[in-house]
Length: 449
Ligand SMILES: O=c1nc[nH]c2c1ncn2[C@H]1C[C@H](O)[C@@H](COP(=O)(O)OP(=O)(O)OP(=O)(O)O)O1
Ligand SMILES: [Mg+2]
Image 1 (tube, protein in one colour):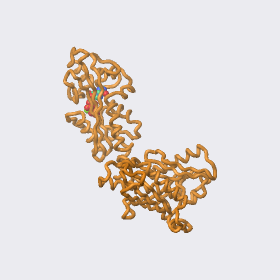
Image 2 (cartoon, protein in one colour):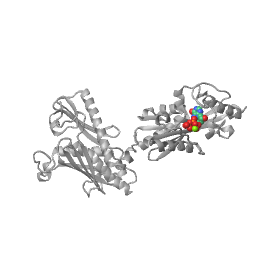
Image 3 (cartoon, protein in one colour):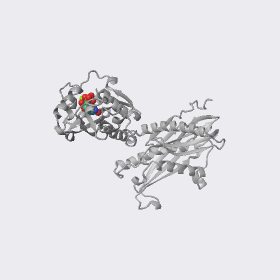
Image 4 (cartoon, helix red, strand yellow):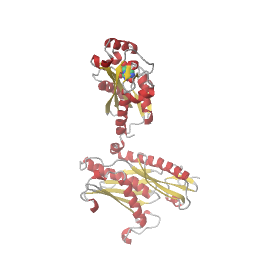
């Protein structure tokens, strides 16, 4: 059955978030969701309620109110009635809880943030839109404090938003307008963070109890809706959002290596990160030759990543790696690929290594693989990490897996060469695995995934 405003069952209403709507409040947001329109102001007061005095901890309090003519029939002002009704009371406590759930009150210091949500026009979903708008206002207000250095560390951990879902005439619907809300058999408010976690669920089957399956369907819709709200909040906040969510560099990553084995190992370790992974072959940069003229693994990795990032405008990952053998002064080091000459094959390089070590006894054939991974972002930001793996250089080649010096490198932990071990083990303990683990941690800090 078609919805009264022609939306799909999983479509939210037109959403508009306007920041700096009024001029006095530290954070002022006007949120419009279809015909629901709410002014959400966040004000900062330099004191806290008595129970928090001298604790260094802050507080967030919310008030919610509907203007007399926000509804179809005029509603008497709270002030004229002399008290706020139970519904408003319940809603304002919900808003307070939702916003507090994503803010570190300790880091806020002894301050109170007052959230005022005033409904200008109500067409369903006012409590959820209040939360979505109030979060933006609060983040704006807190960012100001942070910018002025009144607070040291950003107290906002996550984004939070809220949306309604329900079952109307037997259909699961996202973002109910008033008409739908008042005909709903089940209605539910779903408050979530950007991490996809739930902050609060308010579901009632007053008209008709609902099943576990119904609940799952509703949660799925709620998740979808909150994702759209998050996107709108992020767009409205611009750079301020990046501080909390990480920068959104898109989903494309290119691995800048001419080495098919590295490509496979790196791709394997990154596959759970939800990126589209491209290789140099996919991006076609002509016969690009990058001169690895750095003096360290770190520098060479950066040289490769920078060049490819500049040309592809994608997040670029490059690896520079090699073998350090202690008995020969950490050679071949950064020259590992060209140890036996500029276009040397792996075989030639290994032969040269065995020759240079000669009869050096096992106890003095200690070595380590080193891997530096550089990540360069489209905006030029970059970082580099290093991973190592300790071992010993054997007297002869053993095993047929892997590449490069693998069949000469006996891993201490297994007493077998990398070429004798299955890829699953190598990819769990190698220098590259260790570097990639560090890379993943730093990457997720920066891009928020
Ligand atoms: O897990 C490994 N197992 C065996 N050997 C390894 C490994 N990791 C690096 N290696 C050796 C191969 C090459 O001799 C040198 C890397 O040189 P390096 O310039 O970083 O790589 P590359 O020229 O093959 O590819 P590219 O620069 O396009 O990424 O170290
Ligand atoms: Mg190379």
